[in-house]
Length: 410
Image (cartoon, rainbow, N blue to C red; front, top):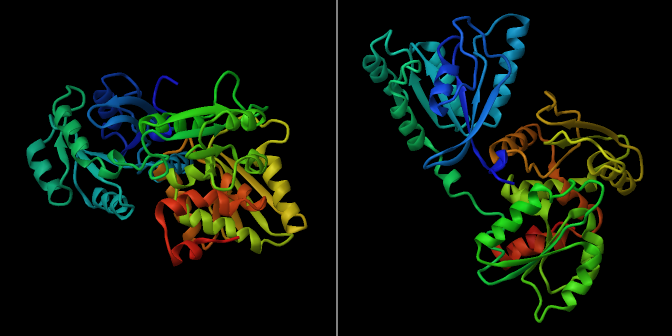
């Protein structure tokens, strides 16, 4: 892995009406021809992404979108795609050549979603850029007058983006934050099966390993079949064992009870989502009844294999636990049902290829609809009676006294 995954990059969405220069602004920002530029309104159809290092912010992905004022049946479909981009946007660049009620309403919509906004007052060669900039500044503090074709003002726009970057992105909690100290030994249990990508580890395993190194700790990586022998060779027990959720039962039988044990997907419940809400969602498995409808959601669109974790194993385990058939719907990638009310539970993957904003957006949609949501690792540990043990490291790191007992679910 030579570049930061998209899920760890700041997602910067570029929005505005048709033909205001959004694609030209993107091309100028990245100094490359990424999006097609034309005088014809509506040239950009599907969202166009460009990943890059944006100093000093770090790794980012710019997303050029179709005009939010597109019309007609095809235009409405384009606008729907643009609205989906908003769900994963962590910083918005609103490109405009005028400042009217339409732009103010778009700004208000972004503000309502707590998305920082930078306005590019574009085509300043055609208009009084400074005057327009001052007008916009009454509503938005981060403004730059630009002419994307001549690159005038692009430096100012870059500085505005840097100033508007959410501080929480720069100070995001690490994967093993609070669980590992410098000098600790962590054991990573990584089964190599049909679902493992050929010649490499899956993203959560790689990112956890890097994070352990960033904490000045060290790690042993083993398959579950070699775990017992590896532990026997240690002079002292590890500070933490992290396992693939599908091997949790086997690993828990080997790792002593006094050694903290959790799963990669459980770690990502906190790293990419809301640990407490996903824990509550796991507890909702207890309320499932035969005939209930369950949504299984995957962030990536991998080719399913035999006994696939999301399409076969989790549905089978849920039905065994509830004692009857469930109605299972499966979505992948950025597909997401408009109406969640028919579901009794949503089980999401670890979202390793999503940024945290997109996962939190999905969690919030479920919460607003009153639908419990959990992730693969949390659900698997609950279904196999391992939930308390998987959560124990987080309790030890954060809670004490009565809070510890209040958190217990199983």
